[in-house]
Amino acid sequence: MEIKTTEQGVDTEAMTSLELRLTYDKDLAITATNIDRVLDQNGKFGQLYETINLHRQAGLESLFKRRFSDTFNPAKFRWPEYLFIPTAANGHDYWISSPPDNHRYALAWKSPNDGPNTASVETGNLFVFGQLHNEGPTDTQSSTAAIGVFYEPSMTLGVVDFQPSVHFKAEFRTALEYFPALSAGGVHIYAELLLACWQKIPGPQEFDLIGVKHFDVATSGRRDQSFGPELQQIEKSLDGPELSAPFVVERGRKYLFAVTGRITVASNLISSDGKPLPVFSSSQLKVWGSLNCLVPQMNIYTKRVDIP
Image (cartoon, rainbow, N blue to C red; front, side, top):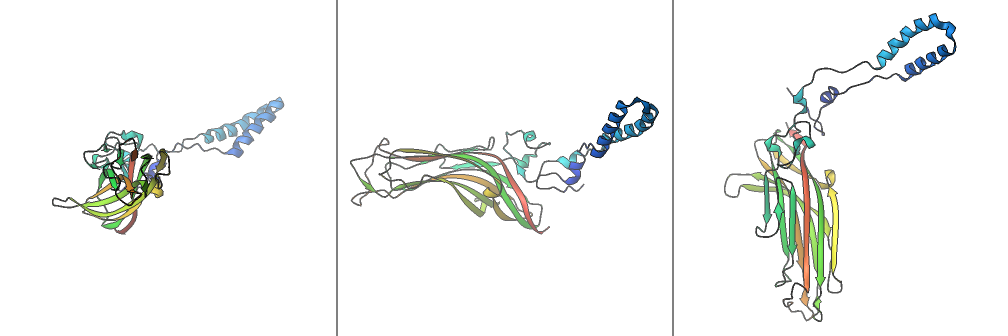
């Protein structure tokens, strides 16, 4: 049986089969009420009351007549093709039926591997941490963590729109307190979300990058020695068109769609005489950023079908 899926995952026929309609005729109800009021005021119309009451009862019964089909087809409420969720999530929190295994998160990875970063396909949590190294305060540092899903299109050629839902909290800590030493330049911390698509290919590389779209979700702004110690916190939720990326896909190929969180700590600090900064203790030079994300679901919508 062909199932036509709307953006919400349920076709019109499926929704109709669940409706419990009450047909309510406002004018008929008002007329019945007025008749009762008149007859209550004058008892001489007893015989007329019985005649009219037959019509009244017929009208009232029509008000609450059941108007739906007893036929229920569970296949019409199968899991939406576009919806992907964490492996430990309860599918019934999202939909009336349970998800197939290939509609749960599949891969998680992080860089660097030995840092505090975490990525979980079970919960959809991402944590990214990056900091300026005191022994190399002019070196830009970058740190990432990602969660992905596999997708195999049913159309020969077309465009899909990757739209994950992400709630994040970014924190930026800056403290350049190494007086009386002076420095020029400054530091800048960026938090990003990246939506990327790879094609799965044979060979040791396994994945070939199709495209990536960057979203700058939070920044510390440029900070230098003139600023005092700061801790900035930014919290926000993104989904739908404000966090989406289109990709061209083909039938017969397997794709990996992923959400990546990234923290970048950029620095061009130098001493006031143009030489490299000496190594300061962590109590004098603190520059770090973190990005904590929850990705409760990822949606891959069919945006355009070029060849069915």
